[in-house]
Length: 107
Image (tube, rainbow, N blue to C red; front, side):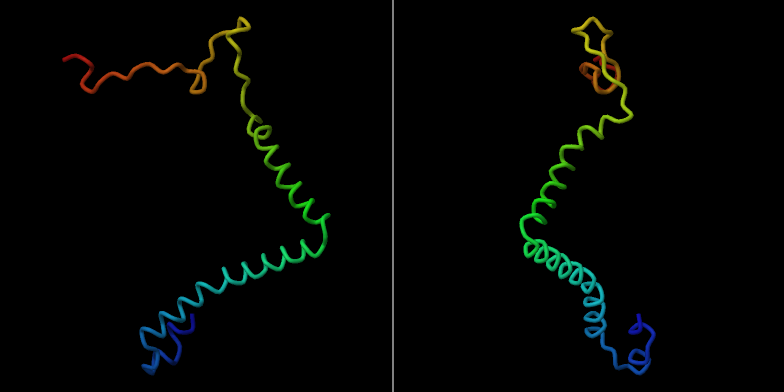
């Protein structure tokens, strides 16, 4: 940043308060620009009519519906013991048993 090594600092014209202000506005600039762009996108979608709004709502709804389907990819199916299959093993099918108290459980 120019304020850290520029001529105002070398000549003693950059006070601590001014430097803090420059750092604040440099940090806040990008979030403000992003918020302004998002607002313009919403306005454009509303002015675009119901088709743009329906497309946005449909994309979000489809994404929500795909989460459970995509989360199953790569997982092994868990056998159902009611159908005569083996008892499930692993963290999802493991029955919890009481934990031993500290010290081995013997008093």
